[in-house]
Amino acid sequence: MTIPYRSPKDVECLKGIISPADIARIHFIPANLEDEASVDKLISQMTKVDVLIHLVGGFSMGKTHEYSFYDWKRVLELNLNTTFLTWKYSLKSMLENGYRCIVTVSSRAGVEAAGQLVAYSAAKAGVIALTKAIADETKGTNITANTILPNFIDTPTNREEMGADNAYKWVKPEYIAQFICFLASEAAKDVRGAGVPVYGNI
Image 1 (cartoon, rainbow, N blue to C red):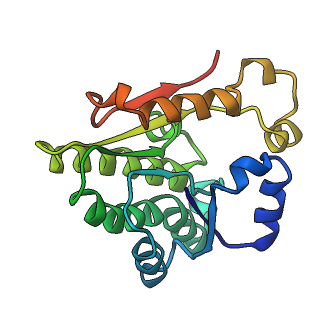
Image 2: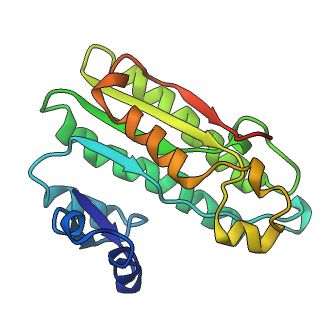
């Protein structure tokens, strides 16, 4: 298993919550997924790519007439461009092998755009469209491409920013992880181009 990272602190944090046995199976490789050359180098270091799980993303909000073009580009860069680059170079490897799968994370905002979420909604809608396009492009192969559409996720950050009164309705991160693992397994080999709602109880 390979996990790219930007900050060594994030690696140390992850090592603090994962068992030593699992840590021993992970190759941590520094990479900037916003840079094409860095992504190319990352993928080229792997013998092959069996499963790509793309979790990179970023969020910001604001009224459209006040929203900066810098923030617009930044949100698209983090959510959509990194998805394209990792898929582009992973597909080269996947097409040479057998059953392979791609899972990424879009958002409910990608299908239900909301005010003050113009960049985030556009980026996540782009992830859905990219997923469907890749699924169509890889018809006739053993490659699958699917995305999940979470709503609010029950994380400490969300509880701090939005309060915890409704957190019991939000999706637990571990449930999202389990569903991603299902989509990445051969049990889901007949699921292609899906955007699966994972909305919790909202």
